[in-house]
Length: 222
Figure 1 (cartoon, helix red, strand yellow):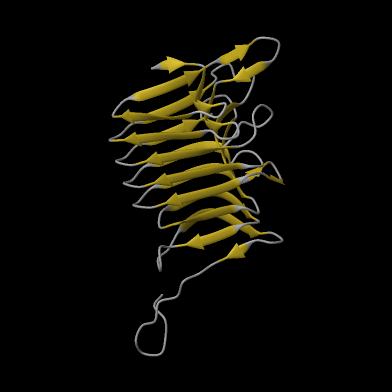
Figure 2 (figure 1 turned 180 degrees about the vertical axis):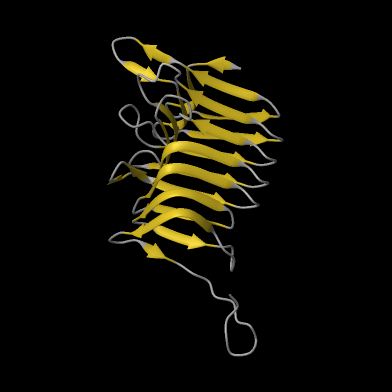
């Protein structure tokens, strides 16, 4: 399937899309008074509830080869257009999401707007690649409620990963990029480890939550 702009559950609606061992490609830019790079919004607008699931090697590609305007994947509202809504993204079975990994700048926003709720989960060696990842954040400002869980050998790669005041990141996978945290960063899965390949900065209000497992001899397991 190929298009440029797409919404899953807009204007108070509910809806879901599943990509099973196939590819959804959003490419180019939409020009009608204002230029918008290829974009997909899941749960766009107050009362909306949208779900996008990728299974069995499914792929989502959001690109703009011309590179003249950014590309976007938003869960829980669309910044500058419709605030609010609830969006869920799940990847399993080696599935992959690529947003702006060509010549254009790309952004993935989880809990994209105030009043919005976004959740993204990865399992089964799945992967997300983008330039900017906001988890309840939008370029230095707090946005909605965002949750990112990376498990099962999965990986998320972004030049910048920003966790807002209402953001939560956890799991046992790998994060690649420069991480800024004002929310909750909770490695592992009671307990466990979350690998960071990059940098981590805990800003004002940021919380690093660690679960420690006893070794039965008065110490802890490392």
